[in-house]
Image 1: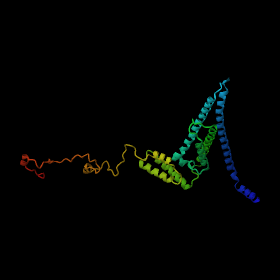
Image 2: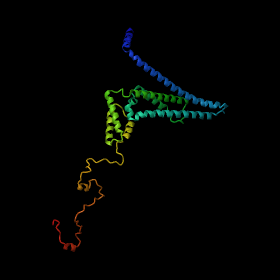
Image 3: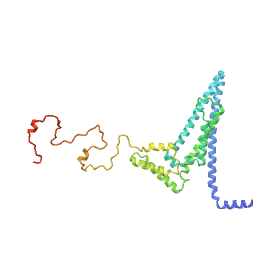
Image 4: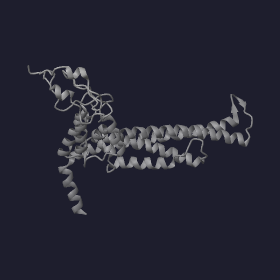
Length: 309
C-alpha cells in the first residue's frame, strides 16, 4: 500500500498540470448531464400536461362543471391525445434521422467530420444504439392502438436519440481529422480538393470523371462510403455529357487547313445504305444503251471526237 501512495505522489509531482484539463472535462460532463436532465424533464412535463387536459375536460371548463363523458368518449379523447403526442414524436424522430443522413449521404461532410460515420467512436456508437432502440419502439402509425406504457417508452427513446445525436455531432466537429495520421490527413485533403473538381459543373466531363476516380482512391481504406453515398455522389458528378452536346472528334483539322475533296465526298463505311450519295458529274456522260435495240443512224453518222486534240 505504501508503494502505491509513493508512486501516486511521484506521478502527481510530475504531472500536476493534468488537473486543469481534467477539471474542464469534468465541468463539461456535468453541464451535459444537466442539459439532458432538463430535456427529459420537459418531455415528461409535456406528457403530464396532455394527460391533465384529458382529466380536466372531465371535471370543469371555465368555472362550469363539464358534462360527464361516457366511457367511449373518454377513450376517444385519450386516443386523440396519444395521436397528437405520437405525431410530435414522429416529427422529432424523422428530423434527427434527416440530420444524421446529411452526414451519411454527403461525401464532403464525411471527409470533414469522419467521426460521425465511424462506429468505433464511443459517442457515435452510443448514438447508433439509441437510434436502433428508437426505431424498434416506434409505432407503425399515429393511429395505431398502443398502450400508455408503450408511448412513454417511445417518448424516452426519442429523447435519448436526440441527446445522443447532439453529443456525437459536437464531438465529431471537435475531433474532425485528429484521429488520423499525417499521411492519412494529406489523403483526406487531396480527396476534398478532388471532390470540389468532381462536382464543378464548369469542368469538362473528363476532368470530373478523373476527379471522381481520385476521390474514391484517396478514401479507400480511410472512410467506408455507403452505396447510397456513392450513388448520391455520382449524381452530383454528372459523368455523362449533357443531352444534345456531341464530343469533339479526335484529330479534327484546323479551320484554315484545306481538306481533300475526294475524302469529303467519299461515303463513309458506316453510311446508311438506303441513302445514296449524289453521283460525281462527268464532262461527257455516255448514256446507257440497250444492246438489243436497233442502232441509231444519227450516232453512227457522227464522227468520233478526240478529247486530246
